[in-house]
Image 1 (cartoon, rainbow over the protein chains, first blue to last red):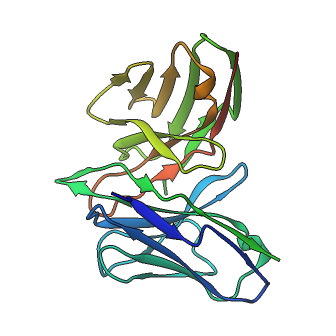
Image 2 (image 1 turned 90 degrees about the horizontal axis):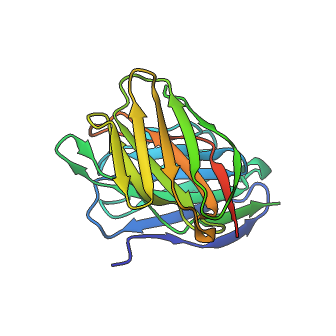
Length: 115
Length: 113
């Protein structure tokens, strides 16, 4: 059982290049999330998808787009990368039992550097 | 939106001592409060969580307390060990089908042997 799988693990881009970060989960979870983690800033939500077919902005959505391809997959796209988007990106997923949310499970992260 | 404050940002203790990390939240509708541990270069991993209908929860050396009136919750680690050294994050959320977590900025815990 792989849990949440992110690809790639590392990437270096030049300013202005585009890139898609991939995320897949095999836990049959409804909800999926993209976070960025910067030193001293904790985890900040970029976008999330509460269920297949829906996406919503989080705290820091500017410069990003997302696609919930199906229940398993949720991708994050940088259309024109900027140095300020250098960060570690984490994907997470969670299920829902009744009205009780289940914990979010995280992938291993993608370390992205933009020069 | 929700705002979560976490203190202290760094904490250094001697092996065997207790460690306490405190968080406050702003939205009184928040009802789910997880704690994550993140070792260097690794993913955040859930260590304990608490829901608003419970005041305290314990799992071996780890406990979490919640004070809804004051809107704060705390992580308590007893008999600390060097392997407890990591960054700890608290988070808060309002439950339901549209749930999302708001994280604190983290506490770097160092346990000195």
